[in-house]
Image 1 (cartoon, one colour):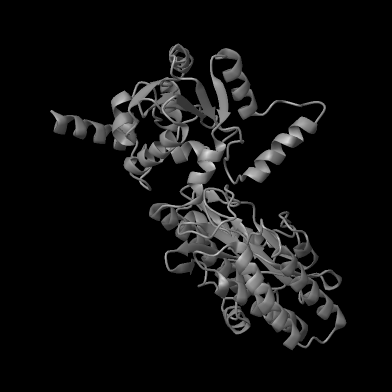
Image 2 (image 1 turned 60 degrees about the vertical axis):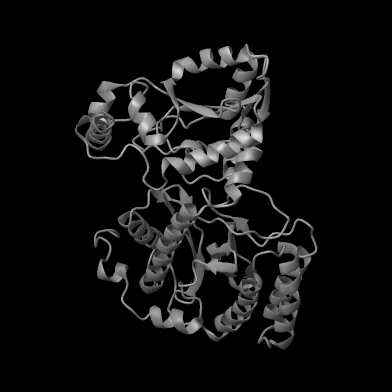
Length: 484
């Protein structure tokens, strides 16, 4: 009988409603999601519940993407889903909307409240119920003398191309608009929980989730490697395709082709493809400028591969050849950058690493001769700023990367295996529209580190050699009518 049920579930999950699309992720087994929930149970204790709200239906003809936090806990990709974690029983219940057969015929099957056995089989979650039963279940739990606390994330959900810093800015912009001023979605949810279930002390689950997400599992790291590989391939093709007269948006299109052609589900963030003066704008993303001979190009872009991101950057001359002044500045920067990469290792704090690197940078600066006082001053500021950052007890080497490009988590202790971050120091000469900024993806391992993006050329000779090759944009030129 069990074998028969398994066959039925397999058929339903693979060809439900006439479609051959998996209804649950193959990137992680149910057991890994279960291990994450087990750590949450341990964190909240036996006298508490935790509830997470999934992402809503997207606006417009846009593919649904689950919130990072919700996906991390259960892997369910259904709009308007909820999950309740019971710390006393150490069991979870996922709440799903009822089946909408008309929508299924139009867009394909989604898991629904009517798919109890299928959802349990695919996800390993113990309970499945309709979304309209969540309030009743919370009310029932509120009658218990033991359950006193209800946890939920206070931080905003991270959706498509979203990091927490941008999510908080989004909320702030709405609050600042006198003709809008809506409460945030998570704020509304928290307020409703407090209003409808006053017997609970509602507390923030975000710190628990942030701590868990900081250390990546082997499967998470594999997805980050994939995102890094695709981001690197786009940078390499970008070097081949760059030439005077190319529009910034053409490189954006080329990179997206590489991402989606290789199975990415989206972009980790909007492309920062900035030529000439645009490179001085930290998050320039308009992509509307034509690249000119003599420009330097900053290319910062990476994909979302199965809910995991990367963040990689390279800089190169638009005409394919570093000028003497560009070579001079880039060579100095590269020597300093390599010193950072070399010093990073497991078991050492970011502050200690930065202090070690700052001393090495001062030596590099002392032995470097610059052709212009302008360059000498810029290099001096670069080293001074890095050294200043090394004095802080809260020093960081860059930013965490994982389910978000600017991933969550806070740590001032020694680097630990499973931590993933990027470094991206910037050397700026505003007077000549130069911003040299490289960025690599670093995975801390038991024995030190892995630079997952090290295959992307950064040496001057490698870049110039690559730029002599024919690029995708030259093989497939834009529509000849574009300028008419």
